[in-house]
Image 1 (cartoon, rainbow, N blue to C red):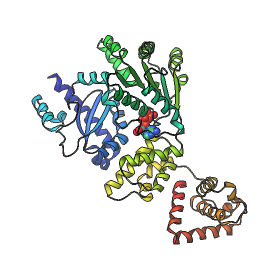
Image 2 (image 1 turned 90 degrees about the vertical axis):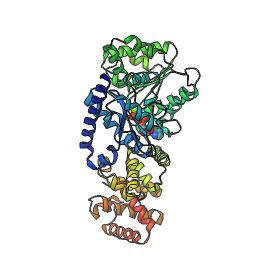
Image 3 (image 1 turned 180 degrees about the horizontal axis):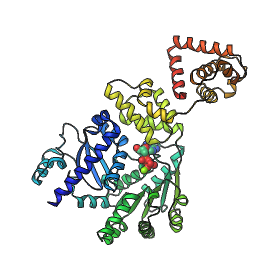
Image 4 (image 1 turned 120 degrees about the horizontal axis):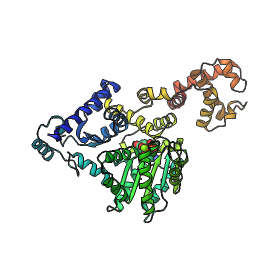
Length: 476
Ligand code: ADP
Ligand code: MG
């Protein structure tokens, strides 16, 4: 029967994806995180799986979801939304219907008896998934991506304010809202937040959120099944249309054309359109000029790379959500070290928390460095004496010039000694070389500083920790 054929080949595709992922991540990680996944339902463009705890869901989502999606794309040749839901152990996970059900009566049985997944039924037909995608896309909205969970700082305040404005406005305030910024900086989060907010205030409104890839895929599928009419109608009857990562639309003419028409039709009808991309409209590659200019008509809000303060704020907020105690020093350490983007920062935090949970010990600076070894190494570069001086001065609130000055007041002499000590520990410079960088001091002064700091470290725990923290922040 056709239905089971779809199901079986879906299972096989999934097995292949899982098999590849297993080779990538290794046996230990596979057993801890991937083996416990149970497949609930899906089709070629949608996969839903269950894990037993919220924590596992967050972990799998932040560490493996992207890889799963990428591998799926490679295996199947089409993008899929991956959704991970929590089914608590007290509510037994149904024997994955897709794995061993040979007959439909068992599917019904399994879903009625054992699944408590609300509100959608656990088994979605291919049609139902498409319907759902276009009608509401509830399935692909991440419940964690809300305005409440979004930490606002200088780099993202404009985008945040604009997103809120769009979500709360009764009349379309600007059209389109164009959000752009580097990867992992919160574009998708803001779009989902808008969708959540509008759905809460106006459940009757039709809100569609789609990645540009998915949009293209739907369009190509509509072309293939000669059903472009209903495709057009579905998109053109929405109140709010959000298309994420629109840079992927570049170069594909037929889809671009369709997108452009859809876009124009909606804007003309005064329906809100929200677009995200990794570049500003004018920098989008392979996109027609008229389209670029049209995309810039509304409000263009960029999200800048993170600052130290924002990273701190985000770590604090995530730690609170995960309900774990992370020592302040660890939080500061991470905020200093993981500067690439918020996704990576979050991934790092999840990793150390998972480790602590697994081994049953609390998070420390040591365990953090151990667990994030690869990640830190990847972000590392050679530290210079100038950087050490700058960081130490910052840490003790003295001027960098005090590192070279002749001032001997304890308040500046001690930080200077610490910087000398760290220069000895963290660089390969000789004592005379270090002395020269500290206002032309003698090598015996440097030697004295090193001894002094070692002595203090052995007698003063807090001091030792401070040095430890500084050195980890600077370390290669
Ligand atoms: P993008 O779409 O720009 O690549 P995402 O929106 O997917 O980035 O964000 C990556 C991760 O970082 C998500 O888990 C998101 O929740 C988180 N994140 C991004 N910005 C913030 C923020 N300002 N506050 C809290 N979490 C954030
Ligand atoms: Mg995104």
